[in-house]
Figure 1: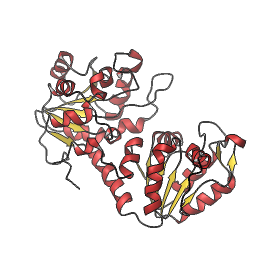
Figure 2 (figure 1 turned 60 degrees about the horizontal axis):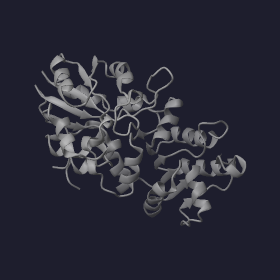
Figure 3 (figure 1 turned 135 degrees about the vertical axis):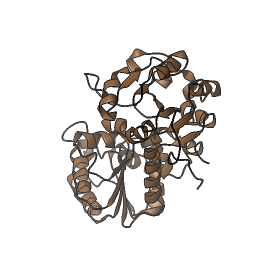
Amino acid sequence: MAEIRGIDGVDFAGKKVLVRVDFNVELDRDGNAMERFKLEASKETVSRILAFPGSRVALLSHFGRPDGKRDEAFSLRPLQDDISRIFGVPVRFVEDCIGTAVTEGLAALSDGEVLLLENVRFYQGDEANDTAFAASLAEPFDLFVNEAFSVCHRDQASVTAIARILPSYAGMRLLEERDQLDTIRRDPAHPAVAIIGGAKIETKLPLIREFERTYDAVLVGGKVANEAIDQGISFSDKVSLPADFQGGEARLDIGPMTTAMFIEVVKRAKTIVWNGPMGKFEESPYDAGTNALVYAMSESAANIVVGGGESLTILERGSLIHKVGFVCTGGGAMLEYMSGKELPGLTALES
């Protein structure tokens, strides 16, 4: 495995640093961030950079799906106050992510302040991985830091192309996520158990197959289980599909017999990977199976790694985000990395 450049030992004094973050979070009716954990994930790296005299930090993120055009419904401005409170520093908002607005915003920063740039996906060049657009992003800056593991499976201008233009480094959280996933993928403590739920069998099946090969048990629920049953997909004895359901023919949650069986497996585990709910967790009583497993994991001494947006939402609702093992910010990135695929965003940071 090639070495990825981290920020340890980097002198940020007097440098203008662009930090790629993932602030693609849900907002409540008042415009407040509901997934605060994703905002908190980059705090340590930003604080480390700001500790250097004269350093200037700008935060770059995507938000929603504006389809490559400016749409105020997908502006990052509503997150400005939340980010300021979480980071504990003043945050200035810039209504663009390229051009003179960014240059002037950097010049106006005082020590300890942070610049929040507008949604990078207001431009088609990001998802198109356009080199000219990446150059425009890079132009005002001296260094680039990727602190968004969750987008590292994307070959996009703000993830990969820019990392080949500026001297580039991995953020502290990104490296921690990579290391945690490496441990549970290559050297898990046994018994090792994977819990896979949510939707889209086509994206989850490669992960199930990988765990089927290397883990002791794979517990499958949610729409993934329904689709596997409906499609007649066969698995080894390591993989457990639900034996009963709640919600009638719609199969909206795993049933009590399956829940009890899954919990017994969890109790014996020394490594647990969880990605995706066991049922329609947004609606009671179809959150019962997921909640029971989450409680069992909270009582476990196993090495636990959690990933996926819905899994994060469940933990945040139950105020368990810091109580159930290590939480990975990236759902899709975690799925691909654990399935053995190379992530372009990591490759771009290799020495």
